[in-house]
Each structure stands twice: as structure tokens, then as C-alpha cells.
Image (cartoon, rainbow, N blue to C red; front, side, top):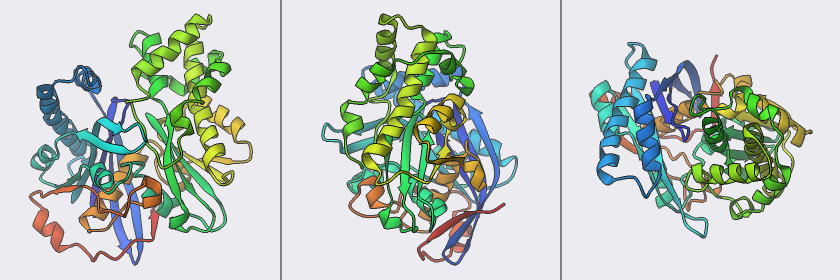
Length: 397
């Protein structure tokens, strides 16, 4: 089956779009990446999304309009990655606007926009979308949904692995040796790139949206005492399963830290270095607090995997771990999440549950998302195989 996965993260810089071929052999899914692009947001649309991140400033009429505008953007991204080919299925995560966490750490609601009906209408393809609410309805965090694919793809008999995504928010899936999915668990470790991106944008007067290669952080001197103080915060101490987002680690959080660094005589590079160290230390601290053992391998994904300073500092903090990329397993590092949602949508169209309760905290495994039939729906359904469970994912080269 030819499947498109679409993902827009908290950085709001582009829609990640991946085209993959998925075939099944027994209980194994073979996933062959065909193409990956980053389809950019224009500045006006990006500003509108950032405006509705603020609950005091987001009007319901604007959110309604933005839902459809983003649907058009996602449809355009799907068409661009297909380059004239017709996909069987499009799987869209959408753009998270709000992920609500109660004071007790439970997720009560989540909201992603990017109207899937628009995607289905523009492309003619059947669409699976709105993945997270079902897991929250089942008592889970609605995140990290990547844990299902992580376990099936990276589980190993002889090596323990921490699959560490560093997107806007960072999350880890712990997979012990032996490849028993019931022993795996996952959670958001804290900020990934979101605070670094904010500080870089402010420091460059909007000219740079991220710290390329970690160059600015490398020039700065991080405030280690401040980072240690921040790591004593409630989120970092909370036991998994747990999830977070811009609601906690957003612009106001970054700006407050930046002001404290300035008050201590720091400059822009020191601010970016401090926030970069917070990302690294929150990951390493989470491993020490919550993982049952040091991982043999740490497999990095997301945009933060390309930040040289993050990689170097993380390697120093985890000296016994072998630091790898998704590319080392045949999976494009930047395209990780888009490919994962292609797989999750494929599971949904086959009626298969794709959550792991120990990873998201849900009461049970759930079939995720909503299905929007496209013009190809009847022919697609006629070709579906049975709903026998999958126990392995492999990347075909």
C-alpha cells in the first residue's frame, strides 16, 4: 500500500511529508521509504498558528478558519511529496494547538487542527487523522504515540535501547533487552528544540528560526546552576507516563529563563547555550530517574539529532551509551514522525490497535484516529487483509 504520512510539530516551520510503501509478510510490516520533504509554512500562516497557541488571544472564529487553511496546506504537502503519484492512504497528525494536562499530571484533552476533510477532498485519497484523542479517552496521555512503532522497529534481543526523539518536545521510548513489548515504556522528557528555537529567533530578530548545528550554543557559556534549579521543577520530577507541550515549555518559559541569564550578565549565546543544556540535562536526568538501567544504545530522531552541540553534550552525559541515528537503521532521521504516522494510519485502516498502555498510560490499547473516506475508499477496503496483530516492523532498502 502506498501511504503518505503528514506531521507538523511545535516549531511550526514546515509540514513533514513522507511517502512510503507498506507491505505485510505474516506478522511483519515492511516499510520502504520512497520520498520525504519539508513543505514550508508561509510566514503569515505561521504567525496565525503562533497567535492561537496563546489561549488568551485565540478567537474561535480564527481557529475555525485556521483549521481549514491548514487542511489546504496539508493537502498541498501530500500532493508535493507524491509528485503526481496517487496514494492509497494519507495519514495526518495535524497541528497541535493545545494539549491540556491537569495539575495531577493527567491529560484531559488535546486539539489538533488541519481539517482532514479538506485533505480527502483535494487529493481524492482516504485519510486517517486525529490520532491522539482516542488514547486520552481511554485514560492515556495521547503521547508518545511513536512508542508503538519504536518498540516494533527497534526491539532487540541483546541490546537495551532508548529511542530519543528531539522535536519541539523531547520524548523517549525505553526498550529493554529481550524485545518484550509489555516491558517497554515511554514519556516526554521535557523540552526539545522549542526553547532553543525561541531564544534563537529572539536573538536574531527573527532572521533564524533555529540554532543551525548548535553553533550559537557552542559559542556560549551555559548557566549550569540555573539549569540545575530548573530540573527541580515539578514536571521533571513527575513519574511517567507523562506528556507536555508548549502549554508549559513555551515562549513565556523561554523568555523568563533568558531574562534570568541576562540578569546574571549573560549574552544571547549564553541564553541559547543554557536552554540547550536544559534539553540535554533533562534527557540525561530522566534516564537516571526513570530508566531501570543505562541504555546500551541511544537512537536519536527529530531535528535535534542534527544539532551538533546537543549530540556532543549528550554523549558526554551518557558515556557508556552508543549514540546512533534513525538513519543507521535505514529510516530518515528528519522524516521519522511522518513515517511513523503513516504506519499508525495503516494500522488504523486495518482495524488494529496501535497504542501500548504502559507507554501512554491508557487503560487499554486502542485503534487510533478517524477515517475520512476518499474517492478510492471502496477499492481500498476491498484490498485490505485481515486484522491479525503485527509483531515487527522492518525498514526495507
